[in-house]
Image (cartoon, rainbow, N blue to C red; front, side, top):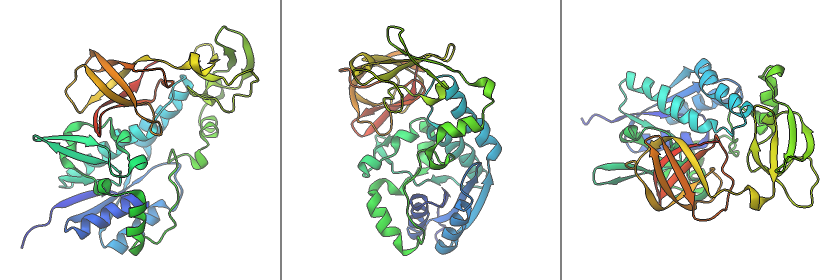
Length: 343
């Protein structure tokens, strides 16, 4: 009798991770599911995961990471906003929790393969593995995995890489009985109201109040905290001007939020730090970069400053880089590297 390959699946109870577990079992793998217990989540997500596992017929484990999640992800999220940065908690959760703590736990239990419900692909070329875009087009999620170490790709299985999101929803109807809803931007913040979340979990003395100023220093309005703003923001500024204004700078020391017209806000050059490489680190030309998950790739070149830092030079001024946000570099479908936009 041939021994089945064991795979640990990170299962949230949502349709995507549930289908990954189902698909792998159908393909003959021995599957066990692992669900995080994390803070601030809806109370029914663990029950959903348990019911899915029962339906599929696989073992289910609950891993309590509330303390680590709070210190590594939630604290980072709040602290970033209070420092005038735009955080990306999903990226750090993937790197430190899913592909960190959970992967370690799976290895301790004898698993050599690991799977999630991300819409990503792995491309194999000349014995090398590369993270790449999936068939899911606008739903492809390689952006969110651009900080995971390249060395762990050899352990990863991404069953959703060959499917679109609508195909998964159709194929999962046979076993997934829950209502399919759109994913929240940040799982631990209900209704995506991050401002109220920060207010509820921060001491009042830590807030940075100040003024919204035009680029020349003119005061336009007093504001109630820099956590209310992100780079490139245009909506909900509460100011009147003869043309649309965008946030171009946030000063955490004096609380000033600087705004200007779009043509003055766009940048052609900026720095990216904390680089995580899938390609060899070097200067690359005629590539592209995504400055946020929902944005279109922009043509660029990059210049190496050090192993962990680069300068990105866009072919034209078409966006406002947000310090603290993830930037991902691409060679067509493949991810070259990911890093954090610097202030």
